[in-house]
Image (tube, rainbow, N blue to C red; front, side):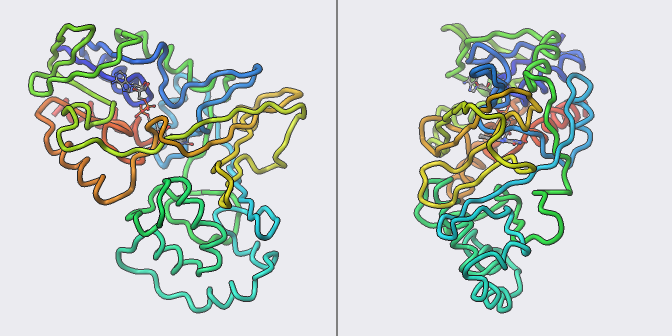
Length: 367
Ligand SMILES: Cc1cc2nc3c(=O)[nH]c(=O)nc-3n(C[C@H](O)[C@H](O)[C@H](O)COP(=O)(O)OP(=O)(O)OC[C@H]3O[C@@H](n4cnc5c(N)ncnc54)[C@H](O)[C@@H]3O)c2cc1C
């Protein structure tokens, strides 16, 4: 039987490990933490379920939705998001919605700017795209500070793409639901996706508490507790720079500090809203009421607050120089070494995309 080593037990690594073992590979997965699940692991605080930042499935891939539902119930929900605009003292819908403009004190100048909007074409940086799409006033209110805060940057001109920012949805009409073109779903189990990991990991060997820091990509090997292990294929979901001992430099990430707050009320955020964005001078970016995602019933509620920080590596930067560095690493991967997942590809991938990468890996290996 051919051997596969998988590094990282998040949704990407575990899905790939499961599919490989179903395809006849002898798979061993190494995870640095004491449990599987990575970013989508559900934890509990004061009996409330939460993830480190909200992790519903948003995906165009029905295949992923159906696949997850074979193991755990993942059910659709409608996502509504509000933004607090401190200067107006009001919450508005996000993405910016045309129907909210009349409620804004500066509505007249906003309309004037919208009338003068140029045609949107060609490659633009983030600031140019948004100012051209919604005008300077709306950009300043809703977008400018949020994205600078999110990425800890001085100017949004540094951002060369905006795939991460609700995929460039600038000014909405019609429903206030965030996206209607994607499947939005969340597990209904109290422990979220956790059972998915329990079930699929029966199909492969799992070594927990193994932080892999040395790789021999040419020989498809990893060092575990001082010993080298080799395999026919190496699938890694850790940051791709570490596979090459950072030879082209370390890839830059931003992370989040996460604050959990339980309050003695049933519900804080009025329905149907689940997420709140804060684009002002608060230190946090987003507040989420988790029980709404989990459909969890309780007399208290848990809010999760995200504060951009460099204490962990969660978001690959949408900046040209970093993407070019990541490409150099990608281009250096030898045959039968695969770097997939959000950090493996250094792409702002979501759950649906990294699960698809597991399917794509299997297809490639079958050829
Ligand atoms: C705050 C936040 C909110 C998000 N919200 C959503 C959302 O709402 N919807 C959505 O679809 N996507 C969301 N995403 C993205 C989504 O969660 C990720 O795309 C997905 O979880 C990535 O899975 P992964 O397996 O590639 O990586 P991870 O989940 O990061 O898993 C990687 C695993 O590898 C382990 N590991 C790392 N290095 C090593 C090593 N050297 N040795 C051994 N093990 C190692 C880690 O401990 C971890 O378990 C969000 C991301 C963030 C950061």
